[in-house]
Image (cartoon, rainbow, N blue to C red; front, top):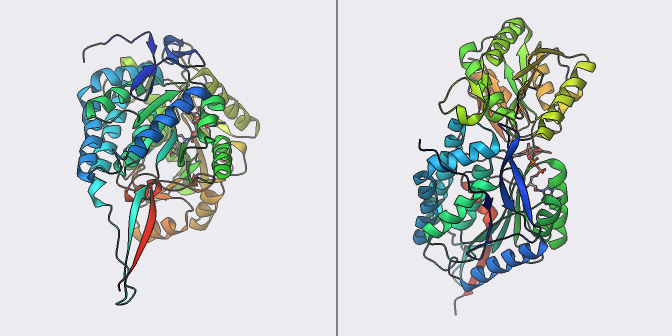
Length: 485
Ligand code: NAD
């Protein structure tokens, strides 16, 4: 992999042009060193106005919405092809700004490209239907794009989260205004390059970084957007849904999680450990669908605890850029603030009676590293069992019966995903029916793909992203009835 030079300054992309930000510049840190990496233009409300106006003009021109879907689909797919053609440099930039191991950045970019492939391929599949009303009528439904799709992106998978919403929005003929995350906005620069390479018209894709309370709030409350797609925390989701309600525009919310894996005494333990490794240490646990609670049958509790502690201790933790190969390693957390928040929750867990079986401390080196952590003796009522840590910390909780496991799993304000580990298919299906979550993984955490619908029950949000379900977020249904004379 050839090393590349980071630019010293990255600008926003509005109406087909790279522009400075009305709110100045922000210094983006490298979480692997804690040192400044580059500057990013920061948008103000006027920049948001300009981006929304450009997206509106492009939409109103009909250039995207009136295009034959196969052509639009090809352009969407070309976005992904661009990412793959430049994956070496994008992965380095993503790792430097987000802290994740280089191989995880490569996976993220491949995942982003996969959204463009998948949704590009769906462009031609969105068909209306004809509704029988007797001989005197001919009636049919069609799907029209909503118009301007405003999308507000979190920092944990900046490229993949943007690809998820942008690909589905473009393929259905919308234009987009993306608000990239303040902590790692730099690699979004490549989306602007990809838009140009794919031949999208000016104004179809606008990308700006700005503070949540300023550019984010201005975008989500803008009078001329037609929908808001948000991924992030619950409090921000509530603010955005409130703004959307005041504008009477629909909103998709993908919020947090406190997801539980339920491990029965007959589970295959090697297989389980593989899932724990991905489930809680991938992206240093900064994953909304992380396996943050491990509910273990008391008969195998001690054996499983010993094994997950050994797993946590086997990981090599350090700068992502030095970790190019897939393996037992983990990078930095995104920021000192996120690490401090996780450390506070771990300290609180101890004061409530939980035990730190492994890790729990910041590494004694530059950068925002937190040791892979295992908490044992966690009770369902503890703060740590109810609150999303959003870091590399797994809470192990013992249970005695299937019914008790379901009650603990469902005893959370969230309901994003859940998992069951057992060799008994009847039990697996009973549990899958009983766990209140939008996606259930049986015998493999993260089983699924861009094809499978994803989204939460309860405080994890509403609406579904991924899969064909997500296309419906980006269209409105029109019915046309014809009286036959
Ligand atoms: P956050 O809510 O602080 O920020 C997310 C985005 O919202 C950022 O771009 C931010 O600038 C913007 N924002 C902040 N305040 C805003 C406001 N008042 N109006 C409009 N926009 C505003 O979340 P975060 O810290 O970036 O991400 C971590 C959280 O996101 C976690 O809780 C995690 O579970 C959740 N998350 C969920 C998913 C999912 O798909 N369900 C995916 C990733 C992250």
